[in-house]
Length: 534
Ligand code: CMP
Image (tube, rainbow, N blue to C red; front, side):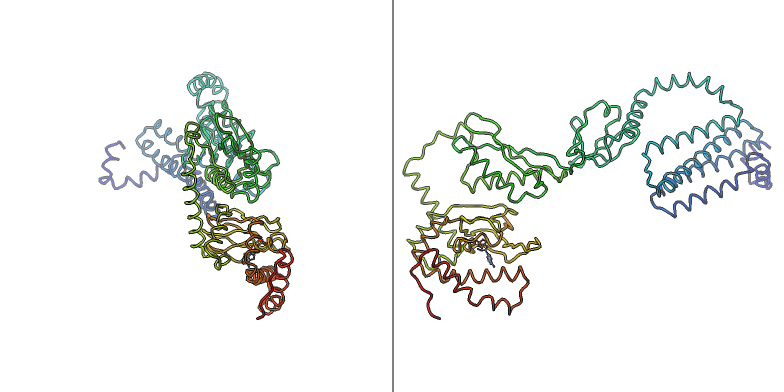
């Protein structure tokens, strides 16, 4: 038979019978059927058992399908008498069969057998084992075709020299990968900084390490570069939780004493740590440097949510800003413009008037119950003594159990009243809005704060100190009655939330509370006023 017979197969009715006969006669194909069944069967079972292995199983089966095709194809040159070509195709097929078997064996060993044991081999062990398997198949095949191991070793020295020389870079990547995988100095999931790149390690392969940055990029760093570079593993210290110290710099001018700045900022950060930062070690504030006209400070905190570094920095900066505003400490202005303008008296008065008008309208808008009965003059006097106190969303305005210094009037935003129960659980008593005031209970009774207040959004408050509050009370002793009723109601509400009281229990508690509180206020403030008969 020649190639013309094969090409004109439709004129050769016996061609397929001939092909089949040659296929059967070819001595090499005697094991093909059982091997096929074993490989395909194993692949199907593995793929069915676990989704995780499907991709690898698919690769093994594709290898095997190719091998099968090559072996069948090797029959055609055999029929034509081209023995060398047939042998080559057959050898290539055998090689692929061997590879497919090694691959499946690797999956069974590492993904099934060792997977159920506590031993967790590194990826490199698997790769080395499979690679050794491939080499073994190659040697077996060569020996089957008459190439002995000794002649192979003799020639391989030369070949190895050539390969090593030409693949220097690849080999150093591979060696680097090997070192990284064995000493496990970095692992998948670590946050690292390598030269200019910061991000989370996504995968470590033989050739490279892939790092996903916070900007949604993936940087591939060849292992040969990596093992020569300094690698910083962020936030990691043996036996400690994952957290990294961050520094937030800000400037305040010389006129404000550093102790005051440090106290205000530290308090703002420690009272209620911002989301994504640690309570322990506690945040703090340091004076870092003296400049031309201002001091440089750093607020330091521990970042626990390493993904959100910039957003958490931003929260801390806002917290610092609000705290400084509350304390009346301005951030520094550029030295060039800081002292060029001295306000004349006229301007200063104008400024003050504008400020007072603003406060009055804020109070009017807020419709504060406490000041409703006051006349214009009284209100003005009161407003002069108010201090502006903004709070950032999430900040604690005052803490349960703390000593009281201020009465607060909320003019913008909302805040929740929280009580902690004996079991340490925080429960919401009520949400306060613009127009509400709080902090009066402790000022009136001399007791510690009965609840905590937390800003639910950015809030603007005005606060009144104890002396000013006392002056108001002495000026209008009749509000003591209104306040004692309010206090009694709030107190009962707190107890009801704390102890899950029903309506009857609340009513019983309310009885007598108002008079007791009124008497207390009366005594503390020495008011000459009695409760009107109802
Ligand atoms: P004081 O105890 O000084 O500090 C916490 C403040 O929360 C408290 O004063 C009240 O002003 C306020 N507060 C407590 N309970 C309530 C409530 N039930 N409704 C509104 N405000 C409350």
